[in-house]
Amino acid sequence: MIAYCGLDCNECRAFKATQAEDIERKRQIAKQWTEGLKVEFKPEDIDCRGCKSSTISGWCRKICKIRPCAEEKKVKTCAHCDDYPSKN
Image (cartoon, rainbow, N blue to C red; front, side, top):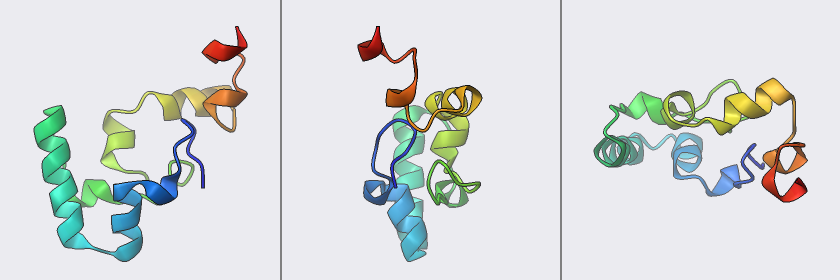
């Protein structure tokens, strides 16, 4: 499962913690994101079933600018966008 940005969702820590229903790992990730980004995240903010699903992580809701752009432009990934840097 490839995200809009091109990352493999199956390698994402939030995605893996959600799939495993690992609340302790979600707590750890939330703490790391909160400390690193200076934006509050709770364990429930880690729930993610992939950025193309309706259950996305707090990172995607609060930080990511790629997902809303790709959805607005209706592209499969950034590489499919006419505005992608390598296409210009």
